[in-house]
Amino acid sequence: MDDHHLPSDIIGMNKASPVSRRGFMTASAAAAAGYTLAAGDVRAEVITTDTNGLATGMAKVGEMPAYFARPEGVANPPVILVAMEIFGLHEYIKDVTRRLAKLGALAVAPDLYYRSGQDLPAIAEISKLMPIVNAKPDAELIADLDATVAWAKAQGGDTQRLGIIGFCRGGRTVWVYAASNPELKAGVAFYGSLVDPDGQKVLWPSSPTALAGQMKAPVLGLYGEADQGIPVAQVMAMKEALDAAGKTADFRIYPGAPHGFHADYRPSYRQEAATDAWAQTTKWFKTYKVLG
Image (cartoon, rainbow, N blue to C red; front, side, top):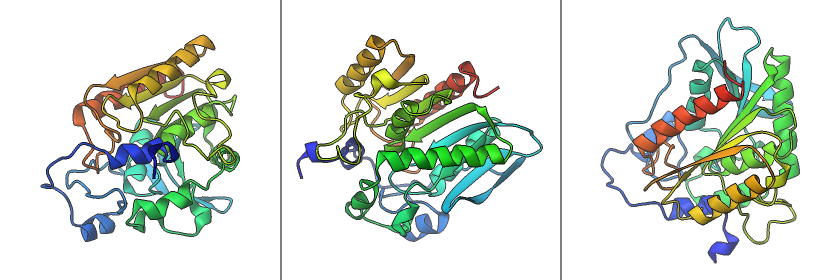
């Protein structure tokens, strides 16, 4: 299929930089550990965040499953939504949620594709995932995130300090939600696509770049210079559109980093870029009063 008809996140993953196959889990071990299969090889040296001092678990937002983590004994913690990749609610997304809880947030990762009735992490082929995740309308996506915010507020979360973070397809989600929710205080988009593929207008009416003038919260965009699906020129075009609209945003482009450079379970992981990007994330949320 022509790349113009593929989402940027799919292109970026399919054209990731080659690496040695050494140091990876077997498929059965990766599945047992809760990681997705469709992303390919899973690194043996994944980052694992413990639950000491945290309350964690699965919850229901209406009918939608969600994983949450929050610091124990802390009243009114800030709320940070975690927007997943295309691979569903697997261990990497849960671990990121715990990392945010360690910073003091009630972090919630809703299972945005639950309506498919399929276990996305158990699907081994991206080609089988694509029809599922590409069928989700932006209107439904926004409604699911709004429902998650309402759930977090009902659990004692301080939604006056609301943030969102997302990776890959979830990075696009950050841009879309920042253009939708005036209550959002800040967002961080890791390699979120900025220009939608052809043929998605019915479900995805406006790409992030087209939404630049509607941004209601400051967004930090974190991108890889070697991302084959999101050229640096697209990132610069987004920056120019935001600047022209007078919107607050910042960007970091990491030299040599491919798509998925923060995904510590994948071969695309780049430790130096990922470490700096997480530091920038924490700083961003503190600057805009999401984190204390």
